[in-house]
Amino acid sequence: MPKDPLQVLRSVFGYERFRGQQRPVIDHLTAGGDALVLMPTGGGKSLCYQIPALVRPGTGVVVSPLIALMQDQVETLLQLGVQAAFLNSTLTYDTQRQVEQKLLDGQLDLLYIAPERLLTERMQALLGQARLSLFAIDEAHCVSQWGHDFREDYWQLSMLHERFPDIPRIALTATADERTRHEIIERLGLQDAKIFCSGFDRPNIRYRISPKQDARRQLVQFLRNEHPEDAGIVYCLSRKKVESVADWLCSQGFSALPYHAGLSAEERQRNQRRFLMEEGVIVVATIAFGMGIDKPNVRFVAHLDLPKSVEAYYQETGRAGRDGLSADAWMVYGLQDVITLRQIVEASEADELHKRVERHKLDSMLGFCELTTCRRQALLRYFGEISEKPCGNCDNCLNPPDTWDGTDAARKALSCVYRTGQRFGAHHVIDVLRGKSNEKIRRLGHDRLSTFGIGQGMDEKQWLSVFRQMIAQGYLTVDWEAHGALRLSEACRPVLRGEVAIRLRRDRYTEVSAGRRQTV
Ligand code: ADP
Ligand code: ZN
Image (cartoon, rainbow, N blue to C red):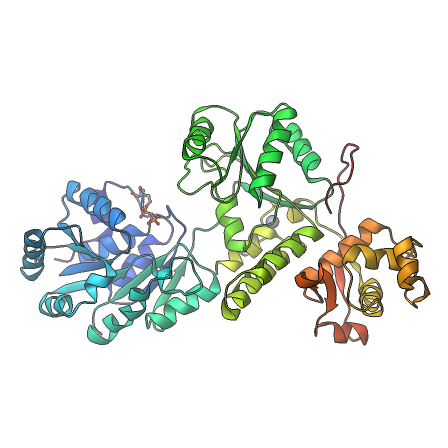
């Protein structure tokens, strides 16, 4: 008699009901279909293959790259009374033979194998003789060259399909941007697989992104107004900045600790422990902080620098509000962020292909910042999840931004970049536009250009906003070898010819207590 998935969930795993899309995935796989499952970490991916492996006759073979995780899972399963085993390099010869014999005797519900082992001729032959219920490929993003976990062995897993065409396969990952998804489908031959993507929404997190004026003061204001005694994480790009922001927060009466890879292991551990144990500690960190940090009551994640990609943003902000109570993802972002990150990408040692990927990721992130519609919908769409309605819990939903017709301003900006020879950064070009007559401008003769003073109608802040958006939208590029000189891109032509209209976001500036402007 075929077993019922819900009964297995209850009797074996002790859970009352399925979560999210577990049920449809399990039904699809049990019926013999292939599946690609995109679910965030903690979403409950394991049951998606464990239950079908118990319901279908034969052994479910799980490919996993992480040996420690493999052993944990098998131990847990054994405690639940499931016949599970693993094969990897940590086992003795005798134990390996025993496991292989169990497989052949049909005594295993689940067998976990490292990819390099699965690919051996010997293992293939064994699997050919055994009765198999399914193949599960965990951490499937390891096939992706773009990711940071690329594993060459994963590429060859496509042969499972060729060698065992009748055995259903399920690939699972928490990484779900479109490019990776396509690569998984292609590399693993999953063209006919049904895609299940869900659970990425974190409804209790409120997303907010504001233009950067004086980042530190904006941060302190945000903390004083909304999180005076809460624990949170502040992300910065450099170690130096981490140190100085932590000092600054302490001087403002917060209990803030630095965390970055340049600190000694003891100091990192000490700071991490205080963050976990004490109330109301703020960690100021580079991205080195956060892996494996599971503190439920992180009330805010603040970014003083832009993350490198939407995925990084999602991961980092996702550390807030794990307890389900409301939490803030707060970020300030400005022209200098765009320029710095572009420079980092261009100056990296990576080959052209990887740079292109990095550029693309950064562009998506910039697009996300400049968005005038619901941020949550955009974030979920990025992961392939459709949400029908605007969320009502992000800055753009709560306080819809104005847009304005920036076509004329954009044309003036582009002309001025062109007339000044595409050799200067935004600040100089803006001075020319605004008709400032300083020493540099006179020396260069830029006060005699036709574009001198044509932008007097707008102040410096407004022009910076125009340039930031023009760079973010790809009309202007930044030449890092030439001290951040702006250059026109191909995309400018229709703008200069007056063929397209440009809508820009009207930046809203909150009142920031007096202080020198530090960054734009
Ligand atoms: P993932 O592999 O997606 O990171 P796991 O499969 O490890 O997630 O599951 C995360 C946690 O959620 C585990 O502790 C698991 O036992 C639990 N879990 C999974 N499905 C359910 C469910 N239907 N009901 C209750 N808890 C569940
Ligand atoms: Zn929204």
